Image (cartoon, rainbow, N blue to C red; front, side, top):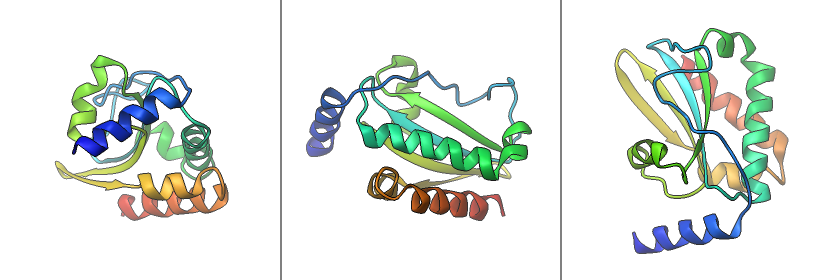
Length: 144
């Protein structure tokens, strides 16, 4: 646990980025479907090139493959800045202290979360097509 906190702190201090706080209860239109898939992109106040690539490629994949679902909130994308105190409960919920990517299915009042962080860091910058394809497949799987 101490290693994870230390690693998270080192990553936050050594990387460079920005973001916007997320509200887990509403999307950009102010409403959410009870059954939906959420893509949660966690990052710190400072971000590395890979962290930026994860967000950029996730947004591109979702806009290309889930435009209608994004409009009707069947699929929701949130960028969560871990340095913002308002986002601490969400970070605690997913037990993350540094840049992470989660895909969360909410169906019939139940939640199922997949941590795609390792996959995202391995592919988003060096193999973006592989990353986008894998993310689309995971979202489609969770929409079923």
